[in-house]
Length: 274
Ligand code: FVH
Image 1: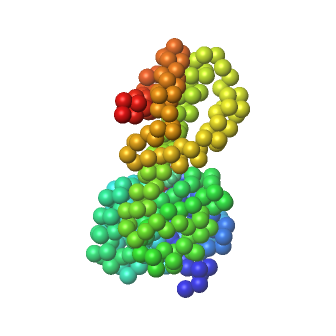
Image 2: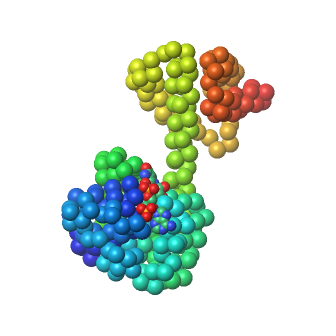
Image 3: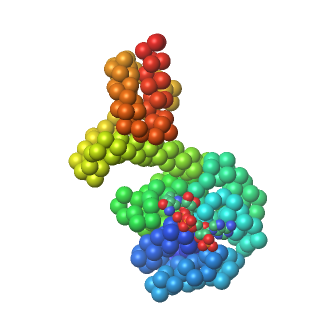
């Protein structure tokens, strides 16, 4: 079927569901939307979307059904009564969840004659449809090849394998990296604030350029064995971490913000000890 003519039904109009629908409408796609609580579709309808009054009606209106709900439980709850309508069709699940949940959902749907393409959205609502946005997909390759051009307007499609759990796997892993950086940034600005520094200037002139400079080293040097190579000079790193922890204690930075530093110090000391 011609990509432009595939009809897309979106289940879920939270912040992300609305952003997805908006990007697809902007690209001229045929979009039907449904949300558990009515009243969220007004702007989308004004731009050409149809609003379905039930999940079943939404599924019937689309060649492709996209779920973007809160969590796995809400997907199950939403689909359970309506899944016979999906038989012979395709669900693209862009709802975040665990690897096991994605695999179990694929098995459950397969048993009902539904093909699942699992997804992980590597974007936030304001960046959906922008150049940096990308979407992880996993599931059958032929399904991905069909869906990718249809949903291309929401973000660059990136297939990560046949295993339906892999989109969730890479999504959760990437988010864990982001939250680690975020915890580090929170620690940094708390330290500056507590010692009387100007947080906004620090963020703009020091923290952001420093983190950008270090990002390739952080990602490239990440290691599954927590092995610290000798050339990394673990003794020097351990001393550096002790300095940061001392500065943080002096400033009264809450101890829970420093957890990542203490675990790094432990790794460095272990490497020094051989
Ligand atoms: N927003 C973001 O930045 C992130 C970026 C990465 C991907 N996530 C995931 O996207 C899923 C949806 O997130 P969201 O931002 O749209 O979330 P909310 O604005 O909280 O909307 C939640 C929607 O789910 C509906 N819903 C909740 N429970 C049920 C249920 N039991 N049955 C049916 N629908 C349900 C809710 O409906 P309502 O409360 O308006 O009736 C919203 O449509 C999510 O997996 C993120 O992790 C977003």
